[in-house]
Amino acid sequence: MSDAAKRRIFAMLDVDGDGEITEAEYLARVDRAAAACGRAPDHRLVTAARAAHREVFRQMGADADGGVTFEDYRTWAGHEAFEESCRPALGSLFDLADHDGDGHLTREEFIRLRTATGNSAEGAAAAFTALDTHGAGAVDRATYLAAIHDFLTTGTSPMADAYPNGHPRPAPAL
Image (cartoon, rainbow, N blue to C red; front, side, top):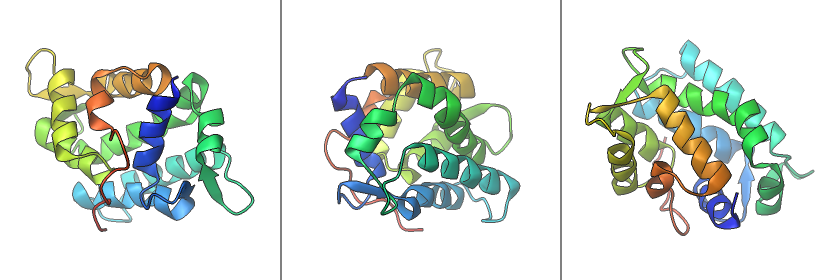
């Protein structure tokens, strides 16, 4: 994976732009997604998403002070990390947004999820359009996860439009 792609993802995860992802900062993604998707904090899907994200944070290799630097992230990120921990964590966020449980996100659900987790609405809309190759008005879970995997591992993907080129705007409040 190119450093450019890793930097774009890191910038999205480092919400306050201080060069380090804290556990609170990282787990707030789950809370923002749950709130945006209308899930109660104690809903079983939210609980599962928090557990999956805690595992990702642990695996990213937080320093002794509890944060993940870009160097930590760079060393960790890749195919194996995606398959071992990112796929379940990102899938858990997909499940939060998939209200009817049909394995597909509508454009509205997709944009709501992606903006809650740090993407711009414009970037999320462009990514949805690129992923909805059949014009069905929905993106399935496998396509969604494959697109994120491709961006993470190769730096190219229909999801590329969703990730900020520089430091992202502040994340939405909880």
